[in-house]
Amino acid sequence: MTIVRRATVDDASSIARVHVETWRASYAGILPDSALVKMSADRQRSSWSRVLNRLEGHQTVLVAEAASGVIGFGSCGSMRAGSGLAYRGEVFTLYVDTDHQGQGAGKGLLAALFRSLIEQGMNSALLWVLAANPAQFFYQAMGGNRVAERHELLWGATLPEIGYGWADLSRTVGAGGPCSVS
Ligand SMILES: CC(C)(COP(=O)(O)OP(=O)(O)OC[C@H]1O[C@@H](n2cnc3c(N)ncnc32)[C@H](O)[C@@H]1OP(=O)(O)O)[C@@H](O)C(=O)NCCC(=O)NCCS
Image (cartoon, protein in one colour):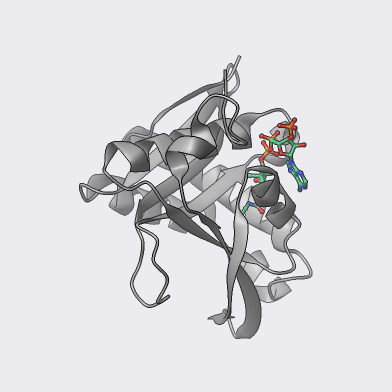
């Protein structure tokens, strides 16, 4: 059984492991190989420790945990400035360990992130995904609408990204909504 809970600083190592593994598996052929090779779980652990130690009031980091330990994580908060779009919240990260994908953890995490945004008074959300990432079809299945495009400079490569928007999170996670979980 998998549960979703708030992350603590003690989860930094597990989050870092999932982060590096999923980036290497998901972004091979999309992001420069040299950057993926250079990724280090140790640096990610330091970075996640900093984030978890200094969470601002509007920010949430969640982990999905199975009997084997942390198998996924996600984070959200107020929408970052600069997009010009009228959404209140933003999902910053969502990653599920490759061995555990397709078993409901991503949906559970996304629903919990949306609930956290609703609790903070944010009933709409935006999420950016690399245009080459098949995860965008997951976001469509979760009721997201393709609302924007942009180009981001990531590790020396300029890559197209697609913005997915949810205009009414209560409806999305409510009974019968595309992201409702039992
Ligand atoms: C994208 C991701 C978070 C989805 O999580 P997951 O645990 O694999 O997905 P779930 O098992 O919760 O799937 C929920 C639903 O979405 C569907 N789905 C999942 N991935 C999908 C995809 N790539 N394309 C279409 N549908 C998809 C499932 O079929 C399922 O449908 P159902 O509710 O009708 O059964 C996960 O696969 C992942 O971490 N991928 C690699 C990293 C990544 O790209 N993250 C996103 C960065 S923006």
